[in-house]
Length: 323
Image 1 (spheres, rainbow, N blue to C red):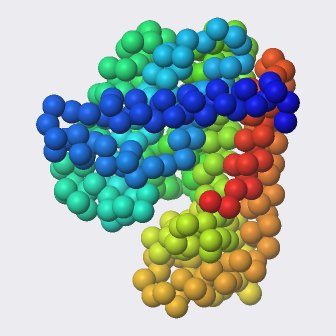
Image 2: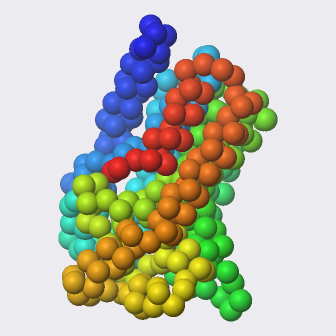
């Protein structure tokens, strides 16, 4: 590692640490109860992937104000966390990030209002950055909601299931990750062609992030997550959708298992065993790798340096992660 790389890593680490502290402060409310509920998921941790992208993209050009970097990252993470409160209500989730979900602890009404409170905190923070940031956050929030509506409504007649799924995760995951990279570019004054490239990169790396989660849910026993969550809920993800598109008579049992929520642990174990041995897993891995390379390709117009190298390295880290 060169001295410049070491300095860059140290800078990124300092900013992420500073953002972590400011996240908690920004989520504070006028009452202890609301503060506790609003800081609940933040305290449980998380990858902070969106703040990381803000910080990395902000270093493509010199001169980015550190306070603006932090505020841009806080907006993205609070918007993300707020959406999780709402998601958990809709999914009737009991656990999030290894702790009881807000809806299971305080009820749906409180969880929804706490999500709204965090959106409000994100909005008041983004207002300090300027109207262009406000516009992008609002457009991103609209996509998040539309993605959730499309997921809730399900397939319409004649709609391709895989296309529907990819559109949903583009809106629910890709949009906010794309906005995070663009926010970073905006903070350092990147030109429009670079901002467009960052948006395309973020959108694609967001899909890779979610699709690799799909694979982890099936393939990994040591990711820190319980495998088979999507199977238990009857949610068809990339490997299952690929299976349905190319199934043969030999796949009858697996098709039946993946056609409904699985409530028996023996059935979950059987479905996981059959899927792990099926060629669709390699097909899914190849698709994730293809999209990671597509994301990397968008970086070619960015200025060379540690920031671009770090964004490129994320393509592999996200595509082939084990947790």
